[in-house]
Image (cartoon, rainbow, N blue to C red; front, side, top):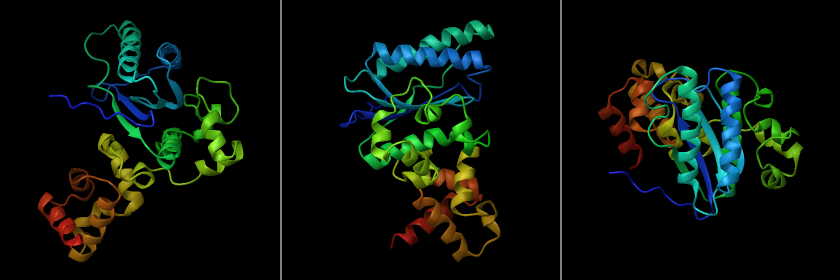
Length: 251
């Protein structure tokens, strides 16, 4: 049974939608432009405020404000519209997007700003290019480009463009930026490994460490928001070993 989505009292959500399996969502800039056009049309039709976005190869991040509780209908339409384009382009049938979109309510200014920064940082974290140089996110909108994002509110919160630039240089990884977020459960394996290495360098060699050293690694990774399954993946330690370290740390 599907669980009801949590409703944000603030009206703000961090949204992620992914391609089916590891399939690419975008093969060319024409595809990306099509999605941006669909996104702008959906924003207007459903009275959403789009505060930031980023199109990656097989997933999309959005930061939206939904005061009229129309997000589900909006995402359904957006994905359906782009799926029509995608299927025509690739001459394929079946699902284009993986399951339902993921969304998380944003109830604090700190998470709101961190989500914006993380969304813009995706290309840099993935090793594509600097966030400021990436054409297919709203980062350039915040730096002066006329785009589809509503940048006014967050720029005001940061004290303008210079404040945005300085804030964007800070912590970029989600597990550190907002550790209580469920976002870490929706990351690809390479993203999980990148986060883990930033928190506990060399964690992939944990099996060769002493028990106390392993406990320290596990404690750091768990405190950052990574799940036991994700810690198993990055350390190659057993579930029981990880559970034991977490239990010991809590006493």
